[in-house]
Length: 306
Image (cartoon, rainbow, N blue to C red; front, side):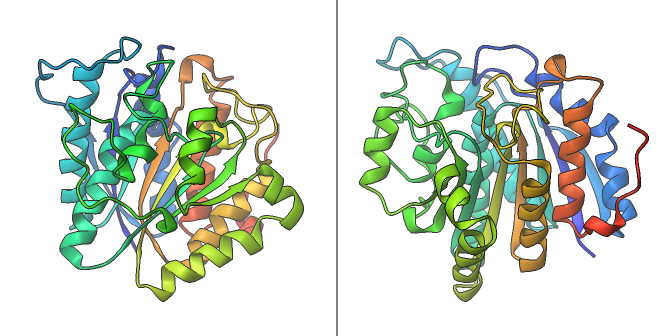
């Protein structure tokens, strides 16, 4: 049994399409806590994280928007996740992917305290390796992985605590990478399992290879699950849709493999925009995927009437 700690992160400032701030409420309505309880896990909902006052900061890139607010969220989420990791497995309910600036930092703080290496699986259509200096959209939800790597160009953000080595990061399901991101990734030893790799090799072999290394090094594993990891035909409630994502079956297989590894120590659920959903279908699917991550098997699924 795992003690699951729910943290709401209604951050909307990392991109420009309103609605992600409703994500935490949607996960609660879709029965995330009940799903975990039914799997015999204990659940503690610590409510929504509240950021402190936004600092009076600017940066040289005129495209960047909501920088002070995102820095305030980063500080608050770093502390919330680091604290929660002392007591159980934090599940951060977003909110856009800018929340990972804080959640991965919090996981890094805890891993350093525990004397263990931190590994990250990035389940996303995008690599999110822009920096504050290189982003042309100005959307800071495209920067968390660069921040976690400790790349330069993040002033006035606080320095990332204990940067994650590139070899400890696995990007899974990537299918939209900007030229600046591609150049940055070529210089770093990141495991990139894009959709071409998954089409050629399947889901299991690439994922197990990475998980085997996490286990061999006694690592802590942070999983960041973006709605756009999924194909938009099954998960429409996201403002950054990219065709060609994982299918229902592939996504559940990933979750089941993660569960069987026994390595996951923290989890993000990001980019759910309930305003774009269809009768809650994306929120319910994301909750269902968490169920698979936490031990539900395919043959345990109830038959549905739709």
